[in-house]
Length: 113
Image 1 (cartoon, rainbow, N blue to C red):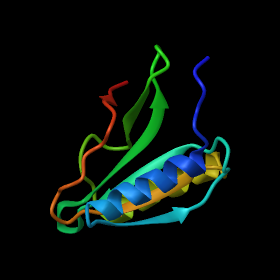
Image 2: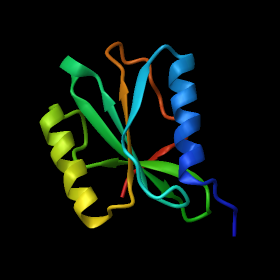
Image 3: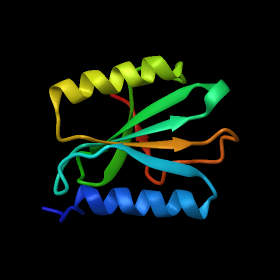
């Protein structure tokens, strides 16, 4: 089994990466520090929001899955989706990244289910 980084460390790395890109990022929900699920909410303001969930592929490598809709949605829809997820799993983390110029990209592949 491949060792996994603690979720708290992954979140700290994302915060640092965003700061290095000049993007505002904030933890809007803090979950279990060891193994809480991680959701990224990319807020492009007028361009809508996208939500991604961290997943593990069959080969054990990390990836992201588009959560909810297949494309950008209004912020209220993204927030409603995340609130429902929190209802299922109160240990999850949510990191919101403000990206009005669409500079941000994920570091791992996006998988489709």
